Image 1 (cartoon, rainbow, N blue to C red):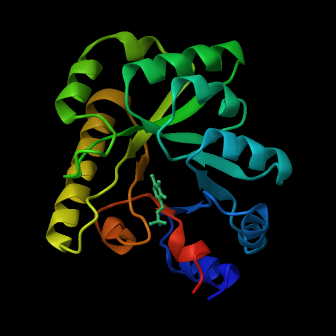
Image 2: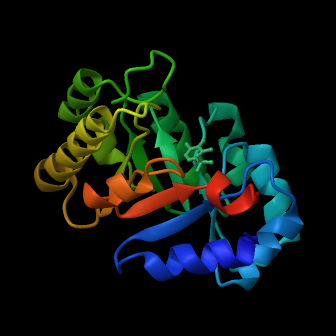
Length: 218
Ligand SMILES: *Cc1c(COP(=O)(O)O)cnc(C)c1O
């Protein structure tokens, strides 16, 4: 299936309120332009250098999403244009984003990445660590960080019960954060990839990050 057909089919099938981020990491600009031609505007990248290079070459109305781990010394590369950073996993990263956003007089929207998967390697906040941080005051002082929601990656397993349990947990954390800490602007639950997105939608996802299903066309 072509990129155009896959984008059209995916977008046509999604309910209102579920956004699609096309994950274009390692894809050439030509592939991104094909998806753009089919109406897609939100693209996800995992490497800041690659995102900055593509952003400079491609149309200005593309929304760039940082989905992969972000090193603090790379924040500067994407701060001027990034639409949403999905991968916030530490207080220090938040502090770096706050100071860089203040410097360039921009507000930067972020998601808190929460670790729910079994695999030891997945980054993100441990729940206990997150609650401890939020009970402090530091984040309340951040005027240039827009806290917009939660991101999570489920365990890569064919066992649907495991994946469902993790998505449900992410949804619960998202709702608690919205209700008890951040309020109505905290409106984005980023979960679901090529292998598990229908289940993520069932569990309340508002934003899918889909790469190989769109770009690796058999
Ligand atoms: C690569 C990546 C995706 C997309 O994965 P696919 O399985 O190709 O759809 C989604 N989220 C993150 C964080 C990724 O790194």
